[in-house]
Length: 586
Image (cartoon, rainbow, N blue to C red):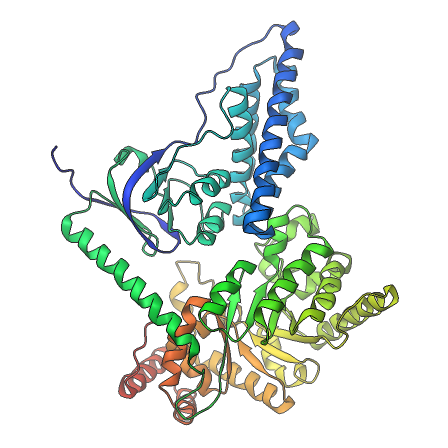
């Protein structure tokens, strides 16, 4: 057979890693749906047929949900809670049923056309997360249609171990099933970084590339492929040279992984003995395993809004909160677990709580502002945090603080919640540590005053940079102006660290700067001793900082504060690190 020419297709890598194997090409869309007109007398029977298919789909979704809850945990099981909500919503099903009655059409067409109509409404939503919830709707409609078309709900493409799945769409239910069958990775024509499919792929530690239009037209089952989730590419019919290159990369990654894990036993300190605390940022509780594997000194940031996002449109119960937080604090022991209260707002579903739209939600009712304006929503979370703290060293962190008044109001709310728990006879930790994020310039400027009111600071450099420089780093027109080494930012960081030091409270950095060796070296020079980052970046940061002297880094930082531009600062730091023999990868 004539060898096919190599092709390299580019998409978006939303779950990292490399896969080399044979393609399994699948089409998850249902069979072609046609509109059929019904006689009026046939409509009741068609409605009954639709209801039966919906019941079967509901039973299957609940079966999958319960299995995921048991085997993968509540957080991933919550993905299928969202599916069940669609089928538990009488308005959703009534909409399809009404179309059968009013238009006198077959149930398949009613499901298809109603879904298409709802997809159009989802597509017009500005919020990226809400827009991608369309995949949940599609998955539910897909299962109803399979039932109407007489297809077995358990029938899905068999996946031999060592296959790279290539699909038009990959609903979460398919991702779950295929991911458990030892496939190597996924390449999908549609999808996004925050989709449930992406979350599941990362949980399975499988690479996923999305956003390659008409991908299935380029290859067939058994075709050799390479999937690069780091670069967001899929290589079809790779040459021997490219195949050897990627096989070498796979071997290198395995060796690198062993080297990274080996750093776990090394003490986190500078070369002159200054102790450091390298902690982990996590989004889902399952990541605590990676944090422990790479030697994290606790959890520096757990973004609790993930709980809300996965339960949306419902809010997590107090018991669900407690279960997750207890798992975190027990896994982090003997180190602390820093849990940030809901940072809902901007693009994080705040509209569901507000039932309104904001012209500029990023500068609107979000973070602690939302907490104080909707205390009835947040009391459940606060009650759970106080109770979960009795199981370990839990620190409560408040997001988007911009004034002293907000801190005092939040502490008053927390005190009221603690008093309520005491009246009820609940077991909880009364002296819960409460700290604030420093991510708004106004908070940085009054850091010396804020430090007298709280137990710790955590600097969120991502937002602090954007708010300080008025730059959206996701806007391609101004992304070049997003400068972590801007002199104004460095001066703010120094002031915050000095304010925390004077008050005797710890300060950490949990933004992306903490996970970059170049920036981390500067942060230590500015006096930061606690850095929180993605678990996998921790070994590289530890290795770099162990080679450097805290005294030297302090001198470097002082010199950087005298320089006038971010470019000058970066050139100086890179030169110093090169002289010190440190390998910096940014």
